[in-house]
Length: 413
Image 1 (cartoon, rainbow, N blue to C red):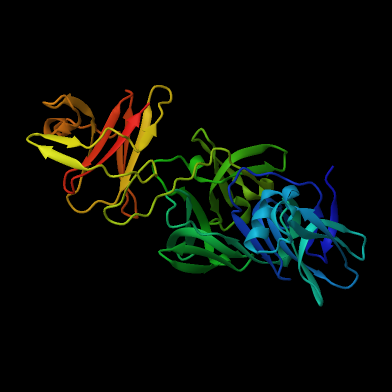
Image 2 (cartoon, rainbow, N blue to C red):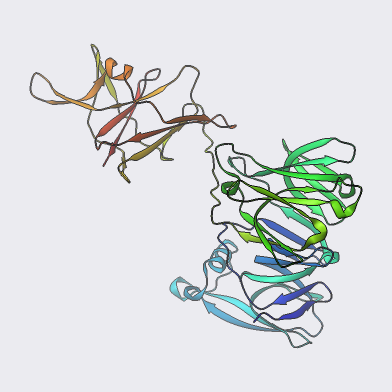
């Protein structure tokens, strides 16, 4: 049974029931007017009322009057990963070796509340504490200073962008990064944040960044629309439309995983929910200098090559990378930032005998002319070229760059 008790005057109601998330990192941050900061995501919104915010981390302020702090130590072995990482990063563990401990606190307030297992960061005129236990809070809209979203990292090749249409007809596209409830909305584009008056934004359209992935693979959260008749629609909201002069005709559009979409009038919606999306599969680039080459995101040794006539020989058949076949195929991605005219070709290693019966390992120029063809080649916005190969035969292979004479050996098992 979920219960709510007052945590801060007016601002927040603590829901004792915790939650779990499949997302790798908090996607939103609430900054409250009293200075408290909550990291997680908006799990539920009630239009014109309040929101429920699911947290992974929260930094709260409390009045010091009537707040009792009870300290206790927790062994390092008994801490969860979040507290271990925080304690090590902030160098606050006491003791040495396996005997290290972290001081945490329980807070008893004048109205009888008990906040357990937190770290007190400040005390005196107020009490500030850190909570790293996932939780859920009901937050009044009028207590929120800012809603923020962490911008995508430079290496992110997937995600969701927004297009805002203003009442003037102008359109702006970028990442949704900040909102001051009832006042402004902000988009990030090319390193510049564009701020808009909320009342002037009449249409939001969401679209995926990566054309090679589905919308559902690029969104960390799903949307649920709960109508006043009790029906529920689950998918991803791709449009919010306020263009009608009659407020009753404003609507949202939700896209289902099937690809179909459906619109709902906002006047008929009771609540909006957010849920972790198990289909979320973010794609990240790798930043390389010109000439760098990685194989399945690994740096492997360059093998010296000796040319003799139409053949090229390696010093050995030793491979720096072994790829396992799954369901009959092995997958290799070669990523590099090539110099102009540079090209990497993949061939199967050939074995022969020298005149003195010594094993020779290499390939020929004819092999290069019939090199393996990648199943896909893409170049990212960061100028990283990625070639993906599939192999169905267990053997030793060579990746060769003729312009530099570099060779890399890998094997499929």
